[in-house]
Amino acid sequence: MKPITFVITREDVYGHILATSAHVTRSREAMGTPTSIGESMLITTDEKEMLDPHIRNSVNNVFCDIVRYHPGSNVETTQEEFKFTINTPSNYPDENGEKLKESIESYIANRTLQSWYTDVKPDEAAITATKTKNEAETLHALLTQREKPHN
Image 1 (cartoon, rainbow, N blue to C red):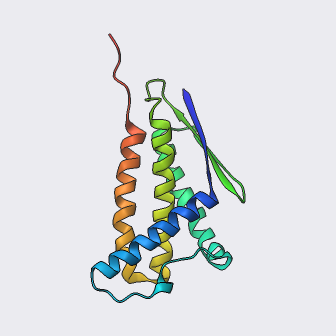
Image 2 (image 1 turned 180 degrees about the vertical axis):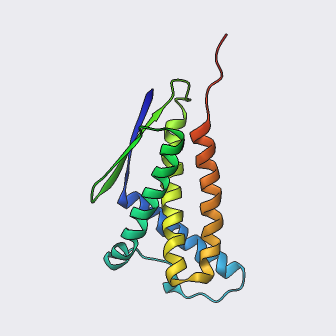
Image 3 (image 1 turned 120 degrees about the horizontal axis):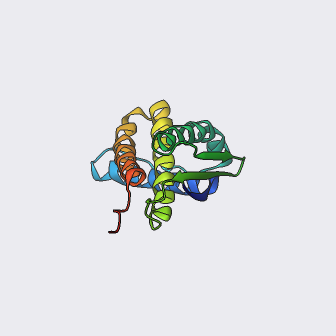
């Protein structure tokens, strides 16, 4: 086994959510859907409190996917961060570590926003659902990659 360890902070996730929320607002404007300047999130303390249960749920969801492909992996959660240790096989590509972190962070942010939008802005949930699905496919591809044996 070859463990890959990285940390994703809540602030990283909030930043990603903020960028995605702004993207959703621009997408709505491009489709001619009325928007107001206040519709994209500012990630205030109140919004962080609203988002935290959705973030925890998203972390649990992505961790279940990770363990399905890499048993024995672990995630340690604190108030500020999520420390992932993924037990990859010896033939897992070393260069995928950073890609895996980016994909997991993106998945957590998109799934969090999708979950929150489902509760408060159902018409926008579909936009983030597509992004979440695409990120899940990218993540699954990264989790299943292996290097070919050298002869």
